[in-house]
Image 1 (cartoon, rainbow, N blue to C red):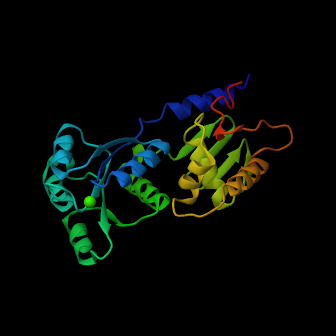
Image 2 (cartoon, protein in one colour):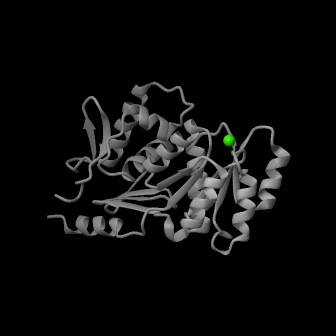
Length: 248
Ligand code: CA
């Protein structure tokens, strides 16, 4: 039995509950895409499509981070932001504002009103996720799980380092993101398409076979000799990080 592995597993599970992100966005397609990708990264997500709806939800439950669209029905994102800054419970809530291109002056106003960061539409999902993580690290460090640890495999998001036991594994940036993506949701099967979206970004026009190539490289780097392979190939479906890795 691999008791070290079991301990590591328990440590990983014993971390603070998953951060809650609220998305306020009236464009259904963007809201769905963000919800999907944030959940895939291990966040909990709630969504409002109007400014006034967001204010009602914020009065009930304060999330760990708010993604707030500028142009909203009823109450604008700016106004929502201004009001929540004036309320004690939400005065330091981390806010990322979404703006359309060409609102440069408006953007400056947004930062003045108290958004912590802004992203211009159309944006790349990996970039927005990186902003979310960076802002959470700054504002809610206890909420960001910096260390993913399963079996004898350790991935340190902050130092961007991977170890298998005592051995340091040097990965290229794509292999690192691929491992991070799968390790953050052990057991979940990702299709090649989902991996392309999550790791390379929606706008990429890369062939699905590229995913196989990079998974191959990742495997070669993390599995030596008779070591166990933590990545499962699920025929006809895609790839998953084995949730039982290190448990048996
Ligand atoms: Ca809008």
